[in-house]
Image (cartoon, rainbow, N blue to C red; front, side, top):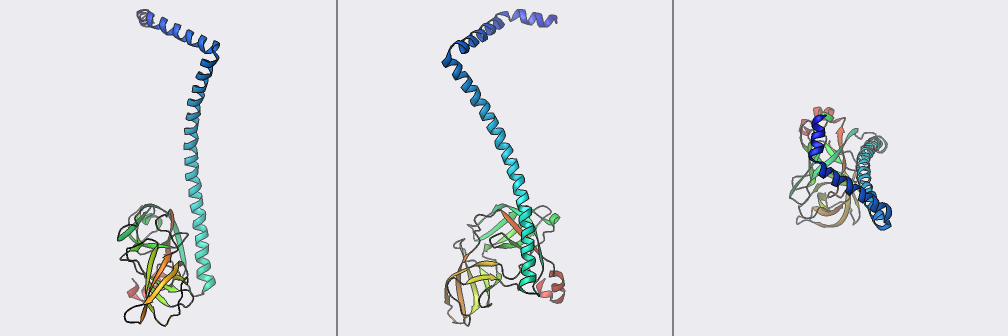
Length: 266
């Protein structure tokens, strides 16, 4: 107590100045309308900004929570769609389940493009599983650890996915030539196929990675190759691979049984 009194006595001039300054300040804002208004406006601005920041953080975390719920709902809906595709269209169609993931890294301007997603072996993700979004085919898992997985995008020169022309069921191979992320090429479609601009290209179901009938794109132009035996078809991809958030990693429940019958599928 004695030390506090000594401190106050030594700094008495400072505390006296501070007391007089506060007194003059209060008198000013109380008796002068302009100064009072300016003070309270400034105070309101500061407090308003504080609460706006607080609200922004609250909205951010709420939005994140809402997105997680939305992804779960989308996953449930996607499973129902996959079940309906596998049971309603063709009784022999393969059964698939899905795991929802979020893209945390995506390239689409290189010749070999990949995506990184936030699910891994802990969630049942394995190499060679197919990956789709709400719009269409994304690619195939090529690397996995416990928490993350890398997807070889269909925008990759090494990517080859079995597809077919929806109207004729003729098979082909979906490839990318490294030019434009909006377009891809379907090769090896025989010249006997009757095709036209705006025909739909879908997954064939011949691969263990994807069910049959997922829309890939529409034909924009086509021509016969030099041998005149096969078409070279340019398609516009239905999926915008430059802007992807949620994805679904597909697991073929019949894959192991099929691999045992045909070791070449492994």
